[in-house]
Amino acid sequence: MEWLEPVAEILHISPWPPDPGGLFWPVLMLLSGGLLGEVVARVSRLPRVLGYSTAGVVIALSGNGTSTGQLPESLRLVVDVALALLLFEIGSRVKLRWLRVNQALLWTSLSEATLTFFTVYAALSWFGLDRPLAMACAVLAMPASAAVAGRVALELGAAGQVTERMILLTALNTLYATLALTLFRGWLSFEQMSDWVNAFARLGYNFLGSLLVALLLARLVALIARRLDLRNDNSVLLLLGLVLLAITLARSLGLSTLLVPLLAGLALRNSSERPWVWPRHFGTAGGVLVLMLFVIVGSAWSIETLAAGAAAAAVLVLARAAAKLLAVNGWARVSGLSGKQGLALGITLTPLSATALVMLADLYSVDPAFGRQLAPIVLSAIAMLELLGPLAVQWALQSAGEVTPGALQARSKGARS
Image (cartoon, rainbow, N blue to C red):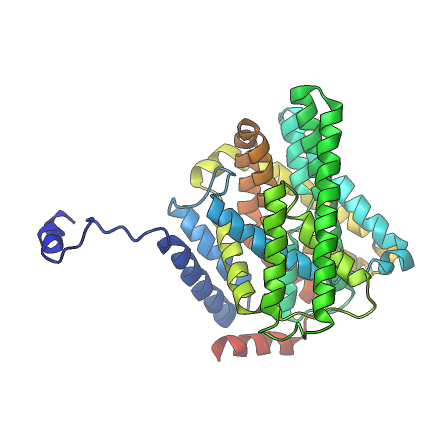
């Protein structure tokens, strides 16, 4: 490049080599993710999210990923808002009355989350991790990625018992995992300060504060929905603004950016008998954020991270998969599913993605030294499942007979048009 310096001086290009600025990488992420997503949908009839994540993997392999567990502030904001949109949308699809009618579903969710925690904790303790580290990994292994599951189901047009239960279980285990993380942070604070009062105060503040902000968001959305059609692309920008406001408030008050949108969606759905229907990912702006979410998560590792944490991550992934399959299949027939449907439902809980990344970032902000120990294991596990997860969900939904061949053909044609 030195031979071009005289030309740069003549053309008044300064500095040299040129600095593209801070906007270059986000734009590159957006373009590469969008392009790969459409190529994947057109050529292979696989979910676009696979292309988005592949773009992130390429960025990680080039050495430009975020591999510390601490997301830069600009990327953290994108992740928080995009994940909030997806969690709010998923929460608004969950009717809790279903748990009263079919109590086996509640026991399935509790068993699946609890067994995942204890199985991963036991496996990693056996592997040689100390208690706090094994416990943190077990908490972060609890949630299945609601973002991946919901996105794949939406793209496939999947419908049926397995799809609905997948949405329910991912919403509930995200809720359980977030509460467990709050408890773990309280325990970590007690270990550091030996002050139970302070630890419980933080726990209560985090949950009750998140609940209040969630109820406020749900109430505002319900009021606006009485006067505006939120399925309209123009009106939905107001909804997007409300979600962004709630997340900004939660971040400024130190509340959970996972609990707020999920609880708001649950409160909204269960305060009314009518189902809530939104534009896909809250319109174009929301779609851009969701695309960037998967690219960012896909890039959240490095070769060095894999070298440091791959072995423990493999133990985590295998123990997690075994626990989820065992728990879901154990309750399948009692809850009204066939053995084949139970197996498919268990497989749909494979993805581990944005939720775990946000939880890791939260722990990193509380205790950076502990976060640095935890990051290689969790980020390696996310990397292992980032491409496998969407494929597992698609295969499971297809094997359960909840995706029609016509839907796949229509999706492929839509990518061409």
